[in-house]
Image (tube, rainbow, N blue to C red; front, side, top):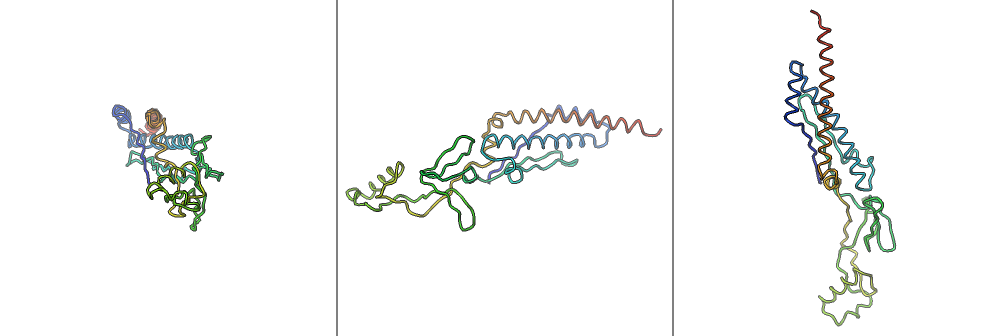
Length: 232
């Protein structure tokens, strides 16, 4: 299973500034940072979901619980974890359907492709997928057409013709077969332009600094009101 942990940090200078501003406020630094981290973490999770849906033909509902996990920060753990995980997605999930040539699918919206000679099959377990026979082609009816060639030349000739069209003189063995798979969700995130270019990280750092300022202001305002209300 592929796994990506997304880490967003605050510059040291900003942390020093927050520490100074909240000096004297009980747990002020921890409260401000944990609240800011959690709020931006939720926004980051939403942004990652949008990023994936933009890249491949899946919905946010399909991804939300299984592939994207957000672990919140707390007063004693001033960090959150945004985890993107998942195995490669079976091609059957990308709108797979039978055609005269095989099975077509669309990993990206509007970009439908076909795997020649593949087929849709439901296994005994109930799992449905796109499969392809992987055994080497072998002589079938009419194999006498190859009788003048060596065994090695026959296999090479059958491979060449099989890649273009089926002939009555060659067949694929029923087994083995293999399921065709698409990309994993973590790989989609890694390859996304927004993530690979660093745009996503820069945006989240800016949001985290801005939200930290908001939380510091709220805590100072409340602390000031509490101090003014205290009896002399």
